[in-house]
Length: 323
Image (tube, rainbow, N blue to C red):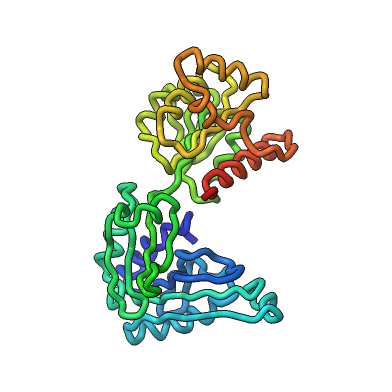
């Protein structure tokens, strides 16, 4: 599978360009305890190869079968799956969950040009929405500002008419980690697994080295300069881990002046109290300082670096998903 679910349009485009018949299946509606959220996708080729997921495995086989038929005749399919509570556990749709899945063959129903524009928008970090009629197949791309609430909450779904489906394609989430310390060695992998692009920032060569972080993007600039260059937005989390005010404080100031949805700082309660006083001294209000999660992470009782990384990732997820 590609590294995040949002890479699937690129995968579908690559398969199509290589001469494979391709369809994209998308969850357009759910009820009950459906295992995958609206907007989840599965890419299928004419031979039944697949990447992604629309149900965690419980109905993929049926979707693949219908997708192969859709590729053959060039027509979209709207599939419905639902079970009663006593049957739910056996097929994976817990508590009587139900889902609707839209299957769109590439080239006939879903224009190749739309896939190209989707992948270009992702590369340029530009948010867009994919809009289609689930009954009559009229796909198009529109500016994310057309659906501001869906864009803000990253929520795909059907409109009130019950047939206009809006799929949000926001730029990938990002996590800027200040301090290439032991905790960061665990956190970068966890963040990437959760769909984040990770950027490690540490001007100390002994810490921010490829030997310690193989294959990672490491910036050796001073933290505030590096963060300004990243142009922090509302889909960026900032985590400071150096425990050194000379490095953490410039990053914190820059993050507080940005739209970052999360700012967490390593340190004890006493350390954080000193940090608060320093920030007040340079003009930040209590409300502004209140955006900082410090001490960082949910209180899970962990002490080992990996456990602390888990607590940080849990808190970032909690803040992101709060409605």
